[in-house]
Image (cartoon, rainbow, N blue to C red; front, side, top):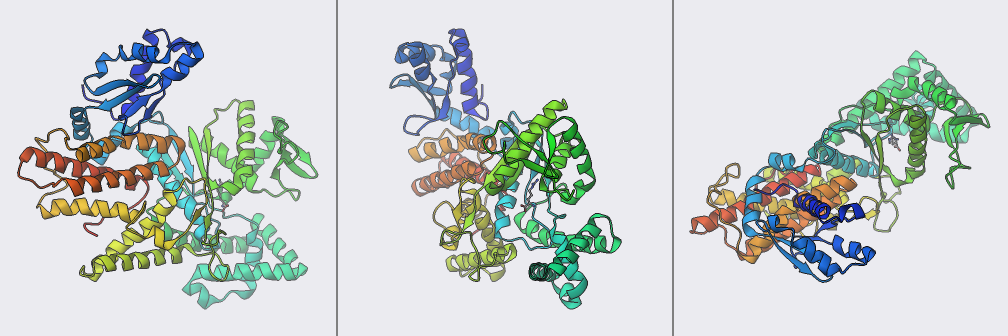
Length: 584
Ligand code: ARG
């Protein structure tokens, strides 16, 4: 029998069956299978200890009782009992070889990776900038993390709908239209339209702040827009088209393609139903002219309600988000929705989810799984949110351009003899990947400091370090006149040297890393695996010559090189990075 893709899951299944047989299962025995410290083996099952304590049994004896039932696993594992009843499993070299032979491509890895989410439909709400403004560094995280989440979910067998929930219907349009009508510079508009709209927006905001008459005029423009005035609608549409075209350039560089872009305006005509339903089912009530939902069981939301319609009767962020949940449930029939949004919107998300849960229950709807995939702030060296020297937001397009320039300097320093066009092409990959990976290699819930020197570097847990490993493996094949598409690995024997074994073991943990990253919606777990894998590869490559005369040794070392390449690329693609470079 060959071993399934995820060995830990397999062990869990076997141990549960044993527990049933021994009469432990109905007393609540949990196997608690974990990836082990490599010194102890590959996996470890810790469940005997907690169970024995609770049931007042001797843990070591219980452990032995379980081990005695694991004869069927001996073919694949060295099994040993340690300390007070920990069961250690060390994969046998022949099993490692069989695993590596099976998972020989990105497709086969994916076929193995299918999870409980297989067949589910998930919508991922990410990026979602507001129109009429350039995307700035604050928009980086949602886009980059969101894309990785989409790819992880799709890899595990879910059907993924990528939705850019753009902010295209805010109160900003009053001031903007006011300014467009009076101060539009046609030449500037033809040159860089988004720049011009941004200038007009700032101008309109300032003017409205300084003069109440302007503020009143701007509010009137907004009402006209909302009530369907043709001229204002045309200006609004133009602003959105221009904004989307500019966003598209960034998405192209980040490898992002949305399936739908249903922004706030799409839900305009869908909010009246929300007011009606929530009122009818007794959740919403009038309060000081607004329509609100209180959550009496919640420490804060019992007094600080979710405002779903403003005093002036206008819809707001909450109304459109409620209409959005309903649309996703009814139209897309989603099983889950992941909202990749800044942690500062946590209160909004909590209230949205609480309200939706109660509302769906009262109306007998199936509630999709709702996940706020939150993230922290990108900080500058001073520990404050990253800004330019003049205190402005850094535009994403400038940031990505600088990343490519810095990567070009790095590549040129290392390989001054490569033709310039090639160095540029490499820098395009490395520059953008470095920015993406700096973000993804951190636990998303934390803030992180944006530091060019650290992120565009060949040392440390960086994209350049991982891509360098990719390029190096390609070079090994190229220099030996071999094709990575058809690696000559027939006749490979099981890994033998300590470095071969360490690398093979690391390769087998890909499934655990993907499962953890997908289960928690935290891509950094996969990043960490790739980093450790590249490290294990380096150690192996420094110790063991690959292109040797002995055909069996050569085949098995080429197999290890090839599978490292496959996993590094599969993993980097899952994170949304490009890996198309031959050398570096
Ligand atoms: N446009 C919003 C902002 O810039 C983000 C929207 C996120 N998605 C959502 N369904 N609320 O803050």
